[in-house]
Image (cartoon, rainbow, N blue to C red):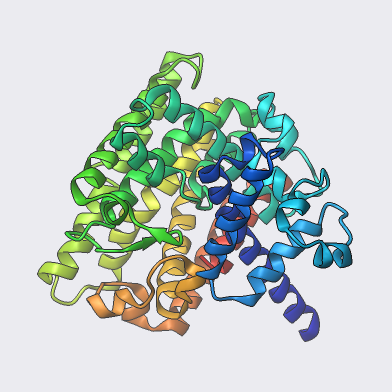
Length: 420
């Protein structure tokens, strides 16, 4: 039994590392234009060089082995792959899995995300990764449609903030919560993208020197490091505004009342009664010492606002999109609240114990800055117990939906075991 458990943990760790690697490969592919011109030898050479340079910073042999695994998954013989010589030659193979990561699949190009997410054999991690690729594609399209003109510095900063990898967990929750009530993924993509724009705006601002002062995010420089502080502030402002523009568009939902309700849910969770208030409480505790000795209740409240509010709203918004009843909306919101608590505790544990190369940002900062977290207040072991309790509660709340909520149950479990 113990051997089986160890094997499962190793498999989960491998899947999480692979998902992180897929984000990096997809980002590099977009930057060099690989998806648009993979037949051109020069494009393949640029992609190959950028990939090798990008992976060097990871300092993990396992990730290079995972790259080979991805190259060969489509049926390419491993022995031939090791002997092939220039990697750009391997990229030309129609069976190479890497190519499909950075070139939109036929389903995505034809606007049929249901075909992408409808595979019952996909694991949760694969489903999350597939949804992330769909969201990335739609975000790129929306930035082109609604954002500044291409070539503008502001446009480049917004792209850097939004299309820099990431799990796309919040938009995934919007899509999956809507799917719980029978809505096709493609019908929920625009609302999901709006929630991700709000999340990315918050990260661009949260990384600023006046706030959390982070230099790295998702394995690359934060917006204010890649550009400058004032550009990061304005890019965040533009993303927040863009989110509500997306929600207001008829393409998001044909019913004006539904669009208005989604806007209300999003505004309530992101503003002065939600995420922004949570950030204020967090910074007041860190920089002003208010309160002098934060209690567990105070920490839970600020984390429920800072992290949990947008996660809970993502779940509720999916239900709103699909026309769920008020009691069903309430269930999804309570699930999202427990999920948010689990997510934040897991984040604090990663800061305390994680490897910066895997997490994608600096670790150990909470204790150095004296941040108020459950980990710092009750210790790692007790925090793990709180995390397990939050996951159990999230699962219990979904019980009325039975097997239909299996993906959302897996989302709660993934939150507790994620590596970044």
